[in-house]
Image (cartoon, rainbow, N blue to C red; front, side, top):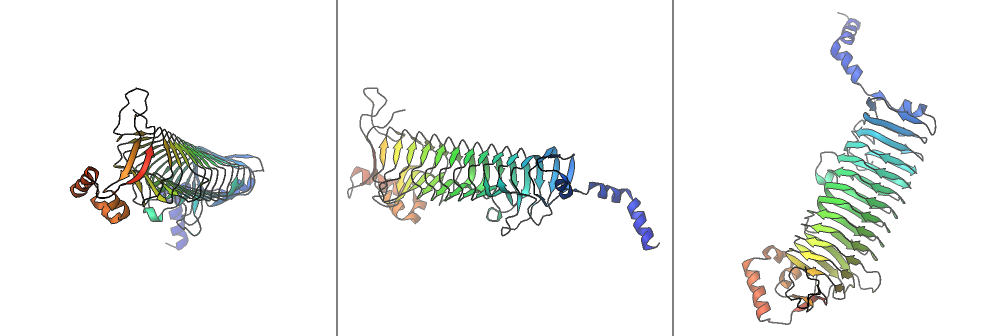
Length: 404
């Protein structure tokens, strides 16, 4: 049979016809044909990416349209202002960190990205110099890669006045906010990552009511002043060098009403020498952590009011004698308080004081922490408390500890 006959026979075969029918439809011509301000409602089915939106419009997939990437680039890019993306499934980005291959790349201002399913992507949603936009109700799942090779589930870069709300992120590296001030991150969930949130050079963020679990570190804040962390739930952040919440050189933050559970360190905070710009930490619960609080640096001066410290292996640790000595404590609940409340006013009759005894060994020699709570160190600690060989170091003094 001649080659032309072979081709015609193959074309008529049912399997070949099914393959042609299943091929994704081109998306770019449909986008280019939509007038500015118009709405493109995709029919159920698959559409081929990569594609770029170059004019303001609404792209609605009705939860039945799939935009499939080529596995070598970003799937869907927005290069204009005022675009709405809704009800789409976006899948199959490339795997290049250099190109920042993503499911959705946004540039410009005043966008809405709502109720989309984004999976098998290196980076989920990338906001690049984007302002006044809303990213809400999306579900992002990264590629099945090792932790070091993943990209960020959401990444903001030089982006301001955005709202990131009610999204679900799974299997990614971080939620990253870099050089991005004045954003609100509310009611999101993230599981299986390195940093739950990585905030760097991004002042005045409001991070509220998020749920972060099974990450190396929960929330790490670097060089980002005037943050509000309120009502967040951080659990199972067990990397040795991280913790549930970590602050470094980020002044004037408010940390309140958070729960930090089962982490290597509940709150890790530096203690800068300057007297201004301290943290206010109030009404939080630190429970079941290896170390409840850890201070490093100079004297500090942060304020701790009305917090609960329960069932932590070590309640407070410091990097060296003197670190955090200027912190202010009042009306916190301590499960290891050894006093009474004889007048039943809810406040302990005597101050709660924490001293360093044998625990100085592993605090000052980190390698010795392997033997922490071993019978030998427990015996040394008991003997130090019974008959100190030297004056113990005072770590903190709460003059009005709260009773349960």
